[in-house]
Image 1 (cartoon, each protein chain N blue to C red):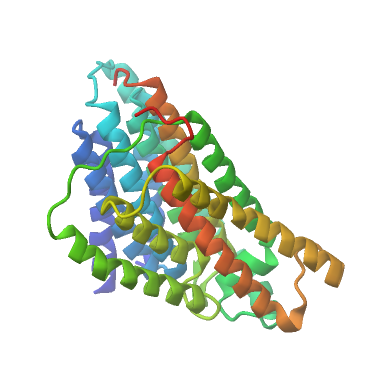
Image 2: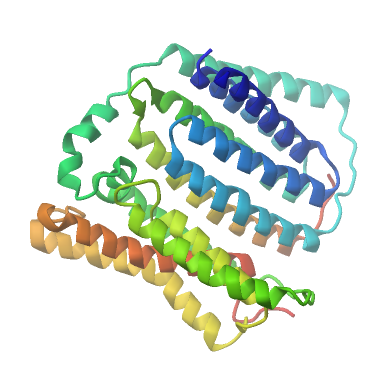
Length: 299
Length: 90
């Protein structure tokens, strides 16, 4: 029975992705992409990866979809350009061959992963009981530190390119009552995900994405100005994540003699503190990436 | 049939679709869309490989989580650059 569900889900994902890539009309293509993202999140729950599924639903489908829709409006419709059948055909054959080789390579090398036992062995030293959070913020904290650096670089790049200022159309009368319910709820969910991350699926990235959603609702309802001091504050909060992480890493270096090696008995407090800072910073960064503001934005 | 194999094939299929679109379209937004689909396909392959009888391996999961966040940053940067270039032919 579950095999039938898996196969139907796989067909749905491939169908939506094909529609997203084949349809000329931009809004329809992006809608198909977002539906595909949500179905993918569902399939990752089936693969036993709820942490990643949460992030895909919130960031991969939600925020990326919003970004694409914003750009679709600005770029205008697709200009048709004819590509010859030989090119389309040979590209199809090459991509299919490459993907099939990849799938065959993975399928034939199964069962050689050794991380699982290593993580399970050292989990008690990490300070948290969710193995994914332990890997992200303790065992492989370097990766996460550099990931936050990438976010900061993207933020600076978008701010310096300076796309046109977003103008939201007037939203209906229900926007404000809806925002009054949705925003506090999203803040609550975000805090819950952050706290939950140490033991159950959740964590700073999922919490930050949900909080960014709340921020976007506030901006769209017109209650937060998209210029002046508010943007400066958001920018400082956005860049503070990297600063917090680097300060924590250096403090750990002084205390334990190892870069990013937190004192084992209070590791949980360190991780929660870093994650709380990261949540705010990720939320501010994602909102700013969507708004694409620069100091000299063209209006 | 185990879910791993079904989703491994799905991930490869997503990768093939995305690569095909990436090489045959010159419209910036569609290429960014294709890049996102490609990343999802690769993430799906990683997660399918991580899924075993004893649950899912945490290290590939952490990689994929990092990948999702980096991808949204890259998408935002690419779209900002595409907007300054303006629309082009498909």
